[in-house]
Length: 107
Ligand code: SF4
Image (cartoon, rainbow, N blue to C red; front, top):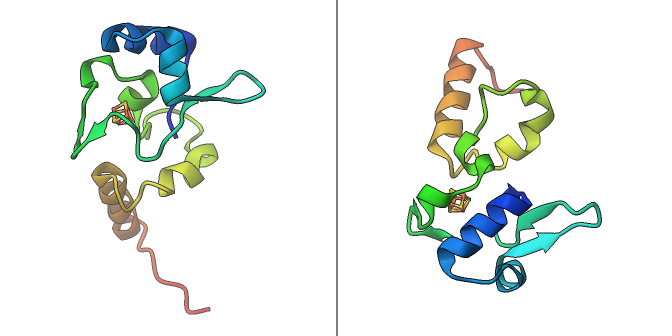
């Protein structure tokens, strides 16, 4: 799920030649708090294995998977959700398992 803000939505709407209303209707879900997210998984803008709006992608996309940002523990669930589809997350987790000598539970 990709969080976006008003400025990012307007920027991408302009790039796509859409009004904000049309952009919001087609691509955005809004929560009661005003939080906006892309309304599809996978994202509408993923074409094959590439981002079709790469130069205009959102801040959350640019920082993903955000291993360098504090409070990773609070984002572990959403990070692990991408374990099987994001090579960065997969490789970091597999490396951590080796480094920390992870052993499969026998319970
Ligand atoms: S990088 Fe592009 S395709 Fe991926 S979530 Fe962001 S906008 Fe969508």
